[in-house]
Amino acid sequence: MVQNRYPCDHIVPVEQEPRHRLVMSNEFVRFFLVEIAPHDRTLCHHHQHDYLMYVLGDAQIVSALRNGEPSAHTYRGGDCDISSAGLVHVVENLKDTRFRNLLVELPPEVGELQRGGDPRIVAGRGVVETILEEERISVWSLEMEADAQAEVWGPAIVVTLVAERLPQKDPGDIALKTDTVGDISWISSDRALLGSHLERAERAIVFQLGRTEEQLAAARKRAGEPIKSRRAHADEPE
Image 1 (tube, rainbow, N blue to C red):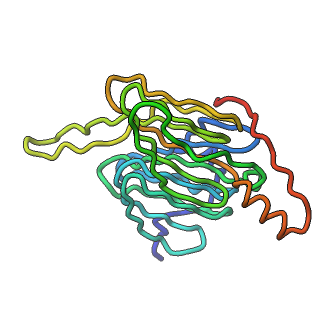
Image 2: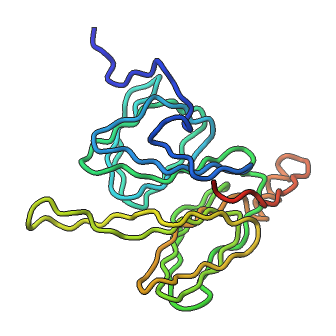
Image 3: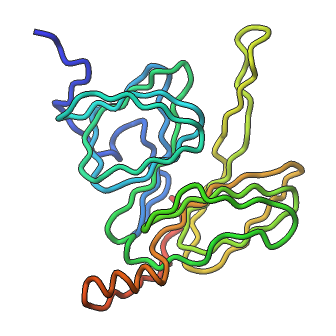
């Protein structure tokens, strides 16, 4: 009898899986920093809610479902992936570098939030790009030069990324870059100004939660009953 390489007899909730670090939690969302060492694997864990994963750096992994065949996945830095609630799996990192990602849970309450306007640069130089647009969440990249300011409307999670170089193992190796997570902040339903106070350019990833006013109206029409948009005045990150 061949032993299962990815045993899933004992299942833990995602918040108890040690490679998933819960860094923000409020009544609307939970936000995790995930880091799996080279050739390491997670415990078998359960995702109660839908979730979005934003990948930091190139990666190659195996996701072994409890009731399914293992599948290989290759990602580039900046890729996003949305998975459905109820997923039970083991994740193995196949590369010689860390597999790191930002994980945003999307419980049903997120669909009741009203999303604000799109982020934009209001002072200095910068670039705003859409990474992903989904009915419950949009993901944005903000590249800001020194002294630039960006306007961001909540509810949103803002993660500052700082570029760092991976050490070279041998002379002549290509010096790869990776992103280190800096500040993580929660913006409620109000407007916030983000500033780059560094001497060099700064990059932020914005996870904007909820539906637009038009999407909420469409959902209300489909349901045949009023949907009250919830204001996202929640606690600060843990």
